[in-house]
Image 1 (spheres, rainbow, N blue to C red):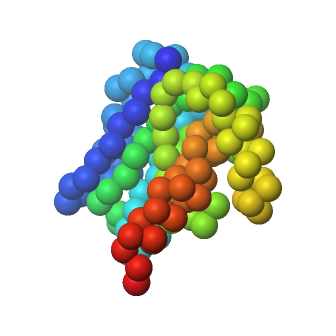
Image 2 (cartoon, helix red, strand yellow; image 1 turned 90 degrees about the vertical axis):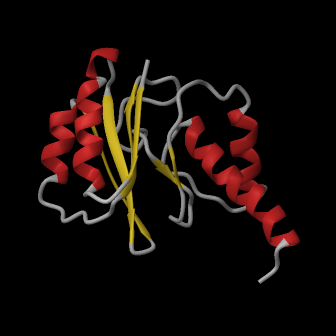
Length: 147
Protein backbone atom coordinates (compact mmCIF):
# COMPACT_ATOMS: atom_id res chain seq x y z
CA UNK A 1 0.00 0.00 0.00
CA UNK A 2 1.14 3.57 -0.65
CA UNK A 3 0.44 6.97 0.77
CA UNK A 4 -0.37 10.03 -1.32
CA UNK A 5 -0.49 13.60 -0.07
CA UNK A 6 -0.95 16.91 -1.85
CA UNK A 7 -1.01 20.57 -0.98
CA UNK A 8 -2.15 23.74 -2.70
CA UNK A 9 -1.85 26.57 -0.24
CA UNK A 10 0.05 29.60 0.95
CA UNK A 11 2.76 27.97 3.09
CA UNK A 12 5.87 26.08 1.95
CA UNK A 13 4.43 22.88 0.52
CA UNK A 14 7.47 20.68 1.18
CA UNK A 15 7.00 20.92 4.96
CA UNK A 16 3.31 20.04 4.71
CA UNK A 17 4.03 17.15 2.34
CA UNK A 18 6.71 15.67 4.58
CA UNK A 19 4.39 15.91 7.59
CA UNK A 20 1.63 14.21 5.60
CA UNK A 21 3.95 11.41 4.49
CA UNK A 22 5.01 10.88 8.10
CA UNK A 23 1.35 10.41 9.03
CA UNK A 24 0.89 7.60 6.47
CA UNK A 25 4.08 5.71 7.36
CA UNK A 26 2.00 2.97 8.98
CA UNK A 27 0.97 1.82 5.48
CA UNK A 28 4.41 0.38 4.81
CA UNK A 29 6.69 1.50 1.98
CA UNK A 30 10.22 1.27 0.59
CA UNK A 31 10.79 4.86 -0.56
CA UNK A 32 9.35 8.34 -0.48
CA UNK A 33 9.39 11.43 -2.66
CA UNK A 34 7.97 14.89 -3.17
CA UNK A 35 7.52 17.21 -6.13
CA UNK A 36 6.88 20.92 -5.65
CA UNK A 37 6.07 23.52 -8.27
CA UNK A 38 7.14 27.12 -8.04
CA UNK A 39 8.04 29.82 -10.55
CA UNK A 40 7.08 27.56 -13.45
CA UNK A 41 9.47 24.74 -12.53
CA UNK A 42 9.05 21.43 -10.75
CA UNK A 43 11.62 20.30 -8.20
CA UNK A 44 11.68 16.62 -7.21
CA UNK A 45 13.39 14.99 -4.26
CA UNK A 46 13.03 11.22 -3.80
CA UNK A 47 14.93 8.56 -1.91
CA UNK A 48 14.70 4.93 -0.92
CA UNK A 49 14.21 4.49 2.80
CA UNK A 50 12.14 6.26 5.44
CA UNK A 51 10.47 9.67 5.25
CA UNK A 52 13.01 11.07 7.72
CA UNK A 53 15.76 10.17 5.20
CA UNK A 54 13.87 12.14 2.55
CA UNK A 55 13.40 15.05 4.97
CA UNK A 56 17.16 15.20 5.60
CA UNK A 57 17.83 15.21 1.86
CA UNK A 58 15.27 17.99 1.28
CA UNK A 59 16.33 20.13 4.28
CA UNK A 60 19.30 21.93 2.67
CA UNK A 61 17.21 22.92 -0.36
CA UNK A 62 15.25 26.14 -0.37
CA UNK A 63 11.78 25.20 -1.55
CA UNK A 64 9.48 28.21 -1.64
CA UNK A 65 6.77 26.48 -3.68
CA UNK A 66 3.29 26.39 -2.18
CA UNK A 67 1.99 23.54 -4.37
CA UNK A 68 3.16 19.95 -4.37
CA UNK A 69 2.57 16.22 -4.17
CA UNK A 70 4.16 13.48 -2.08
CA UNK A 71 4.19 9.70 -2.18
CA UNK A 72 5.38 6.67 -0.26
CA UNK A 73 5.93 3.68 -2.56
CA UNK A 74 5.35 -0.03 -2.21
CA UNK A 75 6.87 -1.46 -5.40
CA UNK A 76 4.82 -3.15 -8.08
CA UNK A 77 7.13 -2.42 -11.03
CA UNK A 78 10.87 -2.11 -10.87
CA UNK A 79 13.46 -2.63 -8.18
CA UNK A 80 13.80 -0.58 -5.01
CA UNK A 81 15.90 2.31 -6.36
CA UNK A 82 15.88 6.09 -6.16
CA UNK A 83 15.02 6.22 -9.88
CA UNK A 84 11.90 4.07 -9.35
CA UNK A 85 10.68 6.16 -6.43
CA UNK A 86 7.69 8.44 -7.08
CA UNK A 87 6.98 11.18 -8.17
CA UNK A 88 7.89 10.75 -11.81
CA UNK A 89 8.33 13.60 -14.26
CA UNK A 90 7.27 13.78 -17.84
CA UNK A 91 10.37 13.68 -20.05
CA UNK A 92 10.22 17.47 -20.57
CA UNK A 93 10.03 18.08 -16.81
CA UNK A 94 6.75 20.01 -16.92
CA UNK A 95 4.41 17.55 -15.19
CA UNK A 96 4.83 15.27 -12.17
CA UNK A 97 2.69 12.23 -11.41
CA UNK A 98 2.15 9.79 -8.56
CA UNK A 99 -0.42 7.04 -8.35
CA UNK A 100 -1.42 3.92 -6.47
CA UNK A 101 -2.20 0.75 -8.32
CA UNK A 102 -0.96 -1.21 -11.29
CA UNK A 103 -1.15 -0.24 -14.96
CA UNK A 104 -1.51 -3.66 -16.56
CA UNK A 105 -0.57 -2.62 -20.12
CA UNK A 106 2.32 -0.32 -19.29
CA UNK A 107 4.87 -2.42 -21.22
CA UNK A 108 3.04 -1.72 -24.49
CA UNK A 109 2.69 1.96 -23.59
CA UNK A 110 6.39 2.17 -22.82
CA UNK A 111 7.33 0.44 -26.07
CA UNK A 112 5.15 2.92 -28.01
CA UNK A 113 6.76 5.88 -26.25
CA UNK A 114 10.30 4.61 -26.82
CA UNK A 115 9.49 4.37 -30.54
CA UNK A 116 8.43 8.04 -30.35
CA UNK A 117 11.80 8.99 -28.85
CA UNK A 118 10.91 9.19 -25.15
CA UNK A 119 13.73 8.19 -22.80
CA UNK A 120 12.96 6.66 -19.43
CA UNK A 121 14.69 7.11 -16.10
CA UNK A 122 12.85 4.29 -14.27
CA UNK A 123 11.30 0.86 -14.63
CA UNK A 124 7.87 2.00 -13.46
CA UNK A 125 4.43 2.04 -14.97
CA UNK A 126 3.91 5.56 -13.61
CA UNK A 127 6.64 7.06 -15.76
CA UNK A 128 5.06 5.45 -18.83
CA UNK A 129 1.71 6.98 -17.91
CA UNK A 130 3.02 10.50 -17.31
CA UNK A 131 4.73 10.42 -20.71
CA UNK A 132 1.65 9.02 -22.40
CA UNK A 133 -0.24 12.10 -21.20
CA UNK A 134 2.29 14.15 -23.10
CA UNK A 135 1.72 12.20 -26.32
CA UNK A 136 -2.07 11.89 -26.25
CA UNK A 137 -3.77 14.41 -24.02
CA UNK A 138 -1.61 17.40 -24.86
CA UNK A 139 -1.61 16.55 -28.56
CA UNK A 140 -5.41 16.67 -28.53
CA UNK A 141 -5.41 19.93 -26.58
CA UNK A 142 -2.98 21.54 -29.02
CA UNK A 143 -5.10 20.38 -31.93
CA UNK A 144 -8.25 22.02 -30.58
CA UNK A 145 -6.57 25.01 -28.90
CA UNK A 146 -3.70 26.16 -31.12
CA UNK A 147 -1.44 28.92 -29.82
